Length: 316
Ligand SMILES: [Zn+2]
Image 1: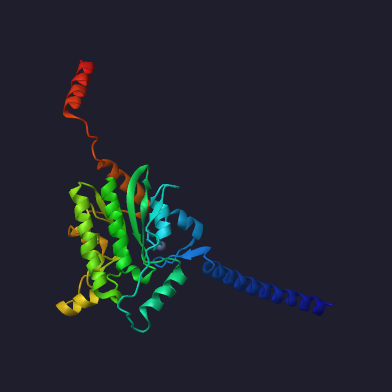
Image 2: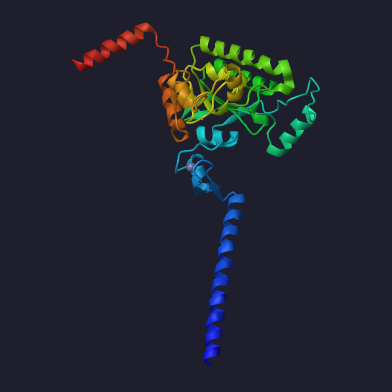
């Protein structure tokens, strides 16, 4: 009898441990599955798990450590532009392969694969929209498409958008992220730098505002052209911003570079960027800057004078 009870007790203890182990592994498996399904997100910086919905609500900025996770162009437009005001431009422009370029594979095959995988035609989205009710022309680069490299389509779409903004007297905002020029397009890629810069010059001559937003990473030909031509240059915290890569510079100079070299914070210290703005504050900051730079209504001098003397009469 005692033996029986003892064995029953032992059995239930075994069951308890077995069940516990089983439930432990299932919850771990469930957790991994949920991360894979995109329900949870593990911060690459601090390792904290956050609910994907909460992270999206915080504009993909880690609530724990403030790490700015990369966002795609659609998400970025959703974050910046007022609902139902986005009007995309030049969506029909497609890249071609004029040099019949081949590295490990044909450039034309690489393009097709990218387009199928990501659902974008090239590495930038452009359009007109409103930011807190103020009209702007916005270009957003997408790092997922060949590292946001600047090919002919990126150059042409940005140029057309800037020209449209000049015509309509709109400010321009470009969210930059790029590995640089698109080598597969050779010279045709490099000439985009001059083309976009010329369009920006005409936009500036019309006394209009241009703000580039430098996000992680902004490098190469983009840094060497429109990313650095802003009236006010804003960067996201900890973004890597530079022209040549760190290793290339170290090898050329034959010296070790400081840890914060080519970071937004280092560039701010040296006057290359005007401010570092957290993504959660970006829309309100942009709206404020754009509102401050709205062109004055053209009032004839006589009327202005009359309204001034009228108001002084009222004060008296
Ligand atoms: Zn974090």
